[in-house]
Each structure stands twice: as C-alpha cells, then as structure tokens.
Length: 224
Image (cartoon, rainbow, N blue to C red; front, side):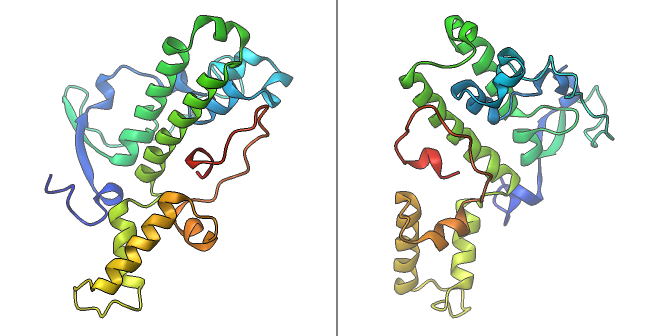
C-alpha cells in the first residue's frame, strides 16, 4: 500500500504478483483475444473476407499472427512464487504473460457466450450486444489507465491543479479551484460535447471504429 500511494505509482512502480512463469500460459493461445474481439463478434465486417471463425475466436488459426520471440522480462526464477511487475504488465501482459484483460476476454469468448451464437459466428441479439459493448468499455478503461493512455483520477486532478491559474503554488486548493475541478469533472462524467477540448485532454484519441450494423445510442460506450 505504501508503494501504491506514491505519485503515479500505476506507471512508475512494480508490485508483487504471482510469477508469470508459474501460470503455464502461452501468449500464442491468447492472440486475438484483445479488446477488438468484441467488435469482431458484434459487427460483421472485414473478418468475413477470410473466415468468420478465424477472427471470432482469436487468431490462433491465422499463420500471420505468430508469437514473436523477445527477451524475457526479469520476473525472477521459475521456482519463486511471486515476482514484481508493473500494473501495465499485470493488466495488459508482456511477452511471457498474456495479462488479465486477455484472460478475461478469452473466458467470455470461449465459456460465457452461448454456443448457438458461436455457431453463427456473430452476435445477433441486441441486448447481449449492448451488454458486451458496456463490458468492453469497462475493460478498455482499466487497460488504458494501466498503460497510461488515460490518466488515473489522481493524476488528472493533480495536473489540473498545477496548471490552473487559480493555484498559487502554495499547496492550498481554494474554494474557487475546487469549484473549477468539480465543473470539469461533471463535464467529463456527463460527456458534455460542448467542451470538446476538455474531453480530448482526458480521453485518448483512437482510430475510427468500423461501421456497426445497429444504431447504438451515444453514451460512455462510444467515448473511448
């Protein structure tokens, strides 16, 4: 907990975690089970040009997606139960550990999706598709914060204070500055697009998503 309370410990520090060498997992078994799996499962798009199943259930049948051999990170000896990893390595993985995000997505894709939908290769249920999109955005938020693409709340608040003209560099947060922070927080929480510069400063800019076959209401599902 002492380490976790350091400034930007999410990005700068390492934490004790079960030694990746003891998980007996191969990254090649998780290729394709990233955040884009949700889009491939929900939307019918370019994946149909080759073979639905190749893209739906990961890329394990695709010879173009082979595991790249890289130098292994320092995770200690294989007989050590724990090793120190960054939050990004724990959440998003490294070259010897797939990361918790891919493990969760593979569980969803292989064990939780109804078999009838697996046979159809794509989701044709609006309610389930909406639930999956919501889940995707929660996982994306966790993934992006772990990697630094989206700031943690503490990081964002600290930077807002330091950059504000209302801050007098005296370690004091005035009532006026508190009010300014609350207004900005409300704008981000409500996704108020009347303030695009603030939203863009908080949320990472990503590539345009493929066209969906359904019309989804604008919500927090679409901002990341």
